Length: 213
Image 1: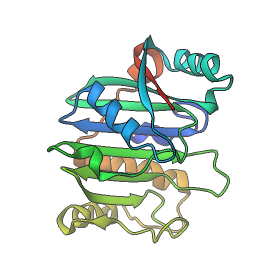
Image 2 (image 1 turned 45 degrees about the horizontal axis):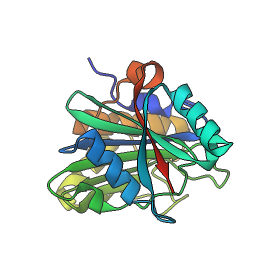
Image 3 (image 1 turned 180 degrees about the vertical axis):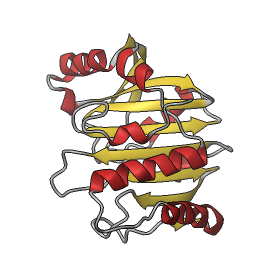
Image 4 (image 1 turned 90 degrees about the vertical axis):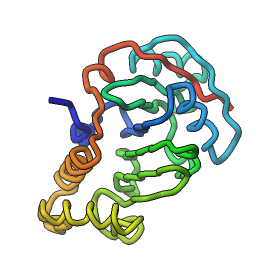
């Protein structure tokens, strides 16, 4: 039994502000960190290792370096169940492009992200990139609050995801957003085999980096 990814839908599941999680096959932790840094859209960022840290430890490192954790960005990285993962901390909101180039060279990269404290509000999002192309993408509330609320991408991939969501009774405008969020994460986790080890992310020291500009 694995943790899957549905637990990310819980309030402040990882840290204040929401979550930004990248899961990859075909990339090691150094390569994944470098590709995330290269996707920064406002300034060039470099990867600076800061040792093995818990989530609280990385937030403290960001506070120490920048005066306020939200003025910097850090990643904790690991490998579990065949996946390389990166979890973002600090002020990552809106700082990175959704760039399929992150998967160039035959890699598969999945990004799930939720700006929980954004007052607009921004829905949680899912992107699946494979070998330099986006093959599936949608907002996890499946509504028109941000974009058109449709599952888009390659017909085979997006079509299967739509069928699985339909089997769960989605989209459903009457359901609470958090319930829809949790259900869609569950569908994606089961279909793509996505899993993020909850205890490891929340409790254990992991290799950590700052993305310095």
